[in-house]
Image (cartoon, rainbow, N blue to C red; front, side, top):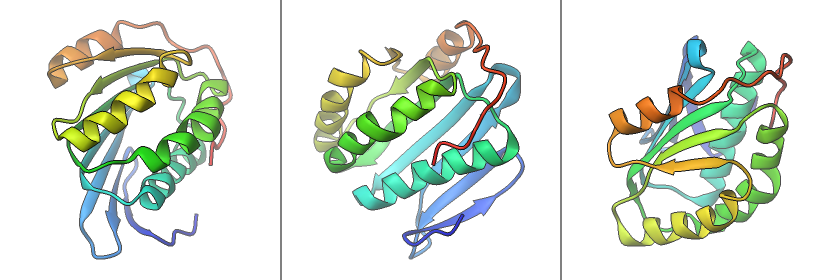
Length: 160
């Protein structure tokens, strides 16, 4: 997949996503035994870069046949608003992810105020789309999410 706003370093079960200056703002890892994506966001991110990062994660999972029915999204180190990307996530990306079998997310919310407000706006609608647990620690998030049922969707596809 051609990218314009991000640089991607890819390994078999993980990707590292950086801005064009080389500053890493997202790490993604897939844990096949649990159909689980681990996503860690950090720093300030332009909305367009967030969208391109999500598109790349969808492309990466589709390319490798990874079915993601659960996720842990760690936003504790994010800064600034990402409100502008919420509409795309809610109206475009998340419905396609759910169609592929996504059902459960454990989220470690941002600590910084503007990022937390953006997250709160996102959660207002996202809670009607899939099951979400807000967690305080990574261990709490992991223990909850791995106890959720597996997706039975046998054919993962690209969600870009």
